[in-house]
Image (cartoon, rainbow, N blue to C red):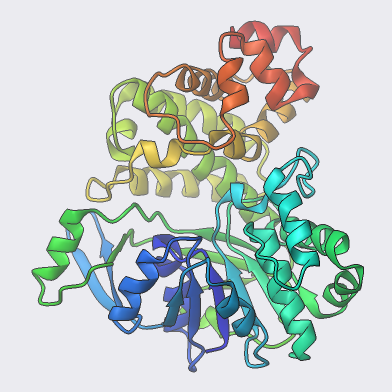
Length: 423
């Protein structure tokens, strides 16, 4: 076992774990859940094995994956510290969603978050139990320093622009508050590569479990995913890494153009369909993209967003065409409710860069505005149910688009034409 992962779930098992299993050599992954023990217990009963169902438009391909060698509840801090203190561990990967990084408006650690402040106290105590993702990372890295286990790479695989830098910032800021000496050790021994990850992976349903059982194995935790997969990475791995490129991953000097393409076109398009599509009674991406009204809005958004992706126009045309095929796959049940979750964390990353860029160019972007108005309607109870830990202050202001904008993007709150368009 040479990799430790935090955020054991379907996407990780369809993506990073699949790449690791397909790479040469025996790396192995010790995977930790966010908090719950249930998935870890189910995987351990199966010796870490699970079925990956690659669901194409007309048929499935199945394979048994075995890169996960052990699984733990995220609450098992002793096991977490023990694993990060092992010299053999070279890589720590993360899939914890945008909200997991506990970032404030400036991109740094959110010091107004009571759980972050509790973690500062917990990390200063030998018996403390940090609960946030940055807190657990700092605790694990402290254990690694104390054991003299050497350098390690911490690799974010979440949809954050500059996710390596974002992870490094919250970890370093928390370490500096808890143990300034640890902050210096992290600077000297820990790298934070940036990545772009892409593979649509809906939640596994009971029907999926039954379908896999019908093949002859009573797998309690199969994963369903699409045929398409992409992983682009940039950065240093001081203790080594799997040859993920053997499975199709790409290593580049700068991941930013690829990351921007995915965040704006795929993820931004998903957010549009989640709010506008669920408002029209649709439940899945395939249903929403088949609706002519939603499709027109999607094209409108993509026209705007493409102007802010630093890649050749022909490449973006091909990418958009591929996205339509992926979105329309009728056998991938990617629910709009799942995508709609945590909008207050997602829209600043997926939509606001385009909105700001278009306003700076003197344009009033109808596509971006449609996403925001659909989200405001969502906050008012239209369409998919609100599932967002940060939604409360926005819901309180949902009667006034200007007040929502002032909270979401204060720099745009005095843009009269934009406020009028949102209204």
